[in-house]
Length: 312
Image 1 (spheres, helix red, strand yellow):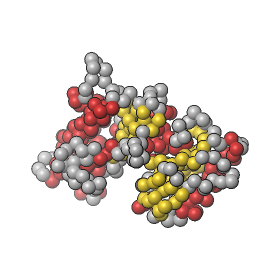
Image 2: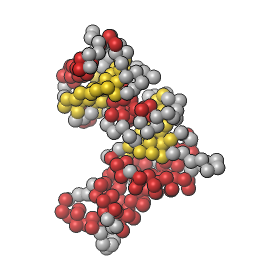
Image 3: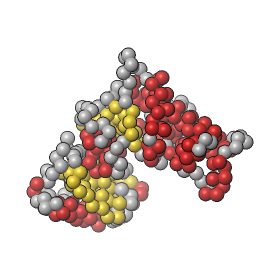
Image 4: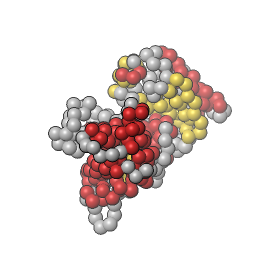
């Protein structure tokens, strides 16, 4: 058995998984922000709890993996820093001893989600998978030959900071024109706002923005479904940018599939259908073979399963 842990800014979730990655059970508590010792105590408590709930002896656990936000040192299993957790330089290597005398692994939460989807989710049965998450920002992860690819410095897979518009909008990372600036949920909202502010075109989004004070990605998708022309135009522009990024990934890596997760992926085929069509026009391919683009299937469990499988 394996244990996977997802350290989030709101909740700490611990799962018990089979050696194959199949999730058996999970437990959660609110994350103790700014309290590293309390956080470690909760991790150990939940690890014991998931085993006890299934009558599993602690000695039958072969490894423990943690998915964390922010920066970290993989070799020492040390979480360096994340603003929303208000703690730094926390080492988890000995957190679970003496009850669990097993290796402890640590990686980025987006990488864990990618590994989970590759092994047990949308990419199951495929060896080479790229995952991209479209949420408040744009993240991702790369799985090659069934294993995470993290590069020489363990931070490979920052898909959101691939430039798709030279000299474009300023990104928080310091570069200009990053995919994150054009393909996050916030980017979709920004495009709709810019379209409204830059012209007199009628749109149901104007009244909605006035009533709510701000728009969300789902608002644009709902308006598009209702036939709003401005929402459709903003969404089409968003898909153009996303297709550019996906085509770049395909042309460079030729993965077996690309998996799309995050909040925007909840739009399902209404997102994927136009994105597939636009990506197909830009990707390098032989004959009619195109890289499949699909929606993630594991939801929040992807990071737990991926964390549990970090020892691969």
